[in-house]
Amino acid sequence: MHKSRLAGFIIDCNTPDLRSAAEFWGGALGMDPRVLPGEEGDKYMRLVDPEERLHVEVQTVTHPSRVHLDIESDDVEAEVRRLEQLGARRVQQVQTWWVMEAPTGQRFCVVQAQSEGFAAQARQWK
Image (cartoon, rainbow, N blue to C red; front, side, top):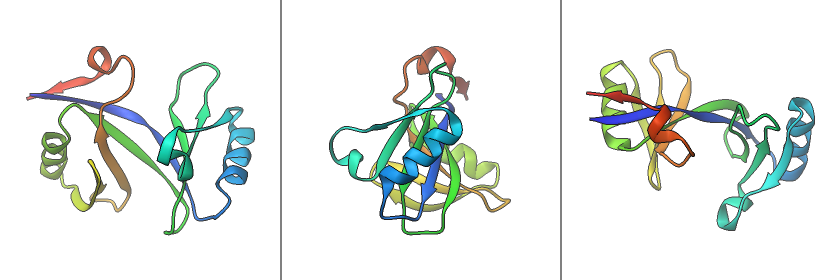
């Protein structure tokens, strides 16, 4: 058995200016942009929700701009297999996570659980 839940939303921006993109989206959504630590800070910025309802990040990408969601799991491989049974397909493994595609064409990621409260809030699957 494993657990999973919606982790948050990632705003993919095809731009070399991540800070400007994060400032736009932060202003649009009323969230303060914050640089992530380490190597992640070169590619991602977090938008801090003042009410702590949503996890939103802005990411610089080379593919066309879009928004995608992340599903977090305590067992990424088990969650990927569960989603494949529902009709999703694997697109690409990136480090420890998988880029997936829904039967309807949307891309999303399955990532390792990291958020506070995951164990208490995630759904358990058989």
